[in-house]
Structure formats: C-alpha cells, structure tokens
Image (cartoon, rainbow, N blue to C red; front, side, top):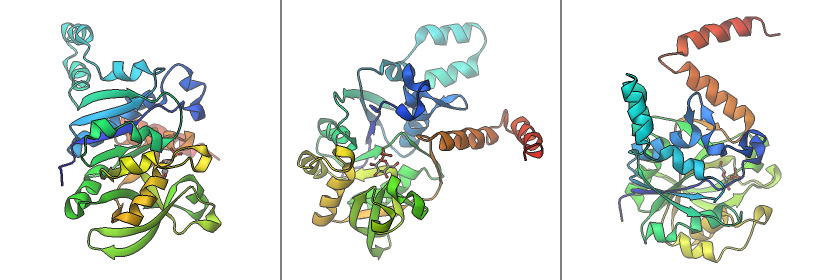
Length: 291
Ligand code: G1P
C-alpha cells in the first residue's frame, strides 16, 4: 500500500453554467474573494499530503498553468514596491505542489478524464479532487479520506447527505456494512432519479482510487449523459473489492452553481481577518433593509 502523494484534478470542462464569465476566463480561476477556486482545491490537496498534481485540462485553458507558474518579473516588481506580503502570496503559487498537465481532447466525461491519469499514477493509489466542490474543513476533507485509505488500503469516496430533491445531481452510494473506518459501498448510481436513489449519500468530489480503476475505466461504456462515468467504474470496482464511503466533516460549497459560488464568497469573506468585520457590518445593514 503506497502513501497517497499524487492527485488528479480534472479541469477541462467548458464551464457553461458560468457563461459569459467563462468565455475568456476558465471557471477554475473564478475567485472566492481574491483566490481562484482551483487554488483552494490544490491547497487542500497539499495540506492533505499531496506532492504532485496532474491537471487534466484542455488546450483552451493556458491561463491555469500561468496562474501557478513562477513569475519572477511580478515578484521583483512587488518587492521593489515594498509589497512583500503580496509577493509571498504570489511566490507561494509555484511552491504548493509539483504540477503537470495532460490534455483531454474531447469532453468524454469524468471517467475519461481520470483515465488519462494512468501513467501519472504509475501503479499507485491516487487521490481525485473535483474543482466544483470547495470544502472548508479541519482536517481537510481529502486528509479525512486518506486516513480511511491508510486504515483499509481500499478506494475511498467522500460523501455527505443531501436533500432528496438533490440526489439526481450526484453519484449516490448504496451503503453496505458499517465498519470502524466507514461504511463499505454496496453499489453506486450516477445521478439517479429521486424515486430510484438507494440513499441520499452523495459523492462530493473527493476520492482515493486504487490502481484497478484504470483498467475498469477503459472498459466502462458511456453512461449517464452519454459520458464515461467514474461512478460506473467505481460501481464495478465495488463488486470486486471493498470500496469505502467516508462521510467527511466540513462545509462543502458547490461552486459550480451560481448560488453555491455566492455562498462561498459570502462565507469566506466573513471569515477573513482583514475584511470580515467590515463585511459583516455591511451585511447587517443590508439585511435590515431586505424584505
Ligand atoms: C460529478 C460526479 C458525481 C459527483 C459530483 C460531485 O458530477 O460525476 O458522481 O457526485 O461530481 O460534485 P458533475 O457535478 O461533475 O456532473
């Protein structure tokens, strides 16, 4: 059993839900306050022990690489103008993890995106994080999954309960035997109708996957939406070996939806040491005038 030091993050999506903002700016670089959503995800990975990240991207998104690349000229400029704290924030970007990139040529689905990480994984168990799910948690959500992996040596899915009305938006887990490390997954369904959902335990964009998943992904036919689904390959895996569901603690924001994105901006803004108090005062005044 290897230590989890690698993560795959799929970022090739078109971000159509955020058009027109995402016409020229990748959705992963839209900020929560002043930090791109993808940076939160990569910082969570690093705080969970990840050293190398593979971004499965598209040729249309060179800005993502630019955000995390060293920019000596900008750092020199900031230092020369006495903006050392800001310079630290910029210099930090190229130090968080070692990044590599692979292009997903066609939008064939999350399962296909993850399958492109086979060479990167090189026979090891790896983490997968999805950029639409930003999680405020201590310990970080991925670290909670890795703990279960270290106890079991098995694949682990991060789950939280959702309202029945929302089950059709997620991969849903049918829970089996409960163990000290979490429940063993009996089966999985990608975005079932509420009437067909086996539970309201939804996969929330955090996974630890063991090496057999790559062969299973290659053999997985297109499923929901005509796309190759990671959930379907994990369902097959769950029939062959133990797969665990980890009900991680923490506040998860669906930053892939406009409402979730606004909630994240408000709550992260309130939590900020520099502007939090002033923002709270503003919100109090605003709320007093809402009908
Ligand atoms: C993906 C997965 C789904 C998971 C969700 C979490 O769906 O396919 O199983 O529950 O992410 O956010 P997407 O929202 O990308 O369509």
